[in-house]
Length: 460
Image (cartoon, rainbow, N blue to C red):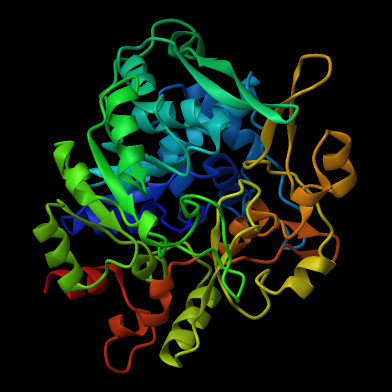
């Protein structure tokens, strides 16, 4: 759904209704401090931070970022520090606390399970983010958009109060290598670390070979799988084999991209189907196939409780009612190189003419890649940053073509757009193909719908 769309309010609503609500774990450091800077409406962030197990960290975060009554609308947001393979203390605090806050709020007031979703491509954030979510008692961690075979072992270590290591990708010339980063709960707590519950780990996969490899070669237990098809929103797995585009410029998925469910069943793990599954008959088909259920994204993304800006939800629902909601699978928008789903919406960065007018800037940096500098040290670059900066770091000119700044755009999607002189960052709405049909959740005479209404539609 994108950063902050599957927020604590939506996850709590779904969990309270008897299913598993899932919060997005992307950019929660930036989201937390921006919520504080707009005045912490309702006091939710500060209330959650009152329960953070290191009070001095919570006090520093509030003192530095909370603006009573909210900042001036045209004042720029203060930024979170960039994540690095060796984190500074302030960056660590914001990642740990941001994830703690989101999970704490999602779990507040009920005893139903809550999950969190991470992108494996955002490697430098994963360990402190997982630790913060585990401090808040998260029940399940779901990781996709990459090969997250190190995540279950990291959670095992954290649950025991032990330090964990994780390898991260490191571009070295034209090749790909790796290096190691660490997170030590004892060091972070300045003494004895807490013993934590180990969440379940669900890998998000698109093929049986990847599922098999993760189950056999991960450094800890894989508890389940989410099998996601290319109609799902956000990042999609690239087509298997050589990338080919259709006449409209979208990736072509074929027979090789249909998962082999016989192999997946034989792995003996619970699995869920994702991507275009929000119909009762699809749930029935999934169960008949041997799945434990389905994962739903797009219908929840545009419901009342989601984090999308209300104007974005209004436009998307109107387009669905009018039969004009269309999603483009953009093969180059994301700096990750993965195809990325974009809802074509007027006034957003789905319009390439608007993109061309935007001044490139990289000040959040979630999707940067790491590379080896000539002197052997680790550098960071993003193909959506200013072209001269990217090229000066050894980036290739062809990788700049068509790239969009997802970090700033996704925060604009949830009403936290950065102010740029006399203008603001514009949204780029990601959505699954099912946005075309979200009007089916509207009751007669209504122009919005709730998470409960989506569940009622699915479960009858």
